[in-house]
Length: 132
Image (cartoon, rainbow, N blue to C red; front, side, top):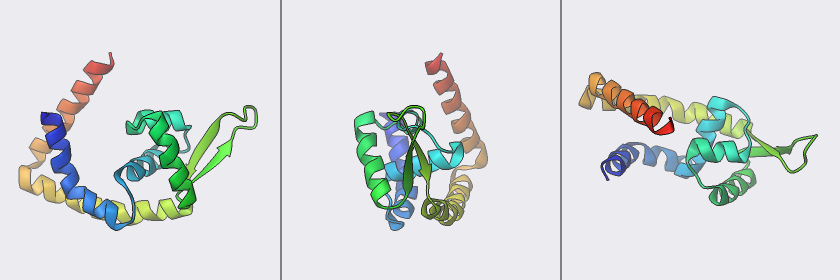
């Protein structure tokens, strides 16, 4: 419950920015993952974004219809698909990233950069321990 409360408090700061650009939280997570990692298969995106595979299919279909991603089949295996960002998504990343950075700086000013650093470190340690 503590982690869920912390996540919700954080999203209260960022959700309005994401939705003001016409995106859902899931769509923004997909865009961020592809922006940071490059083209990926849907299963890889699901893992990175913690979105179930059945939900991911719908998210990607809507994103493709909105011109946010493209899908390309592998030449050697037509069952596999590689998802990439479109120019429109790259432009959204540029537009949103500046404001996100400003909001992170405000957060650091409110709670202190040391607290933010400790939280990041603790979450990294928790995830590392759980993934072993």
